[in-house]
Length: 178
Image (cartoon, rainbow, N blue to C red):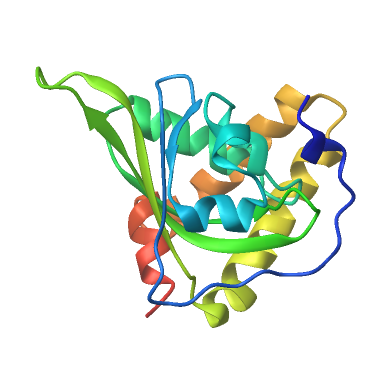
């Protein structure tokens, strides 16, 4: 267990410039193989602490498991995904990002890892759409006595939401700015 998993949440939000870009890369199992300076700075970790560590070292408990489940199933299908994500710094602070995650390919075209670019998110979209949605999904997940059943119900809630709008998940993410 990484020390940041035991860190109490501070409620303090870290921010970064809209001109900045957070970059990280992982292997096929989600272990960090690269991070840029801003990634390490916001995570509150050093490169040495991150390389070889699961990317969920920055996972915030207010991030619905169903969104990560959707992220992984989308990536494993060879597709890219866009999503709003709240991450946790090692000291318990948090920071929101708008992430674009895609597969990294080797010279033969085989997936050999994943690449994520993150930008500062639109605050209005976070407050009006994402935070309430993620609170609802987390409530579904923790409200079920079975973690597996809670995840399935949360995934079903996402599916129902985007189906009702006749959109894919990525199209739904894009539509929030309209």
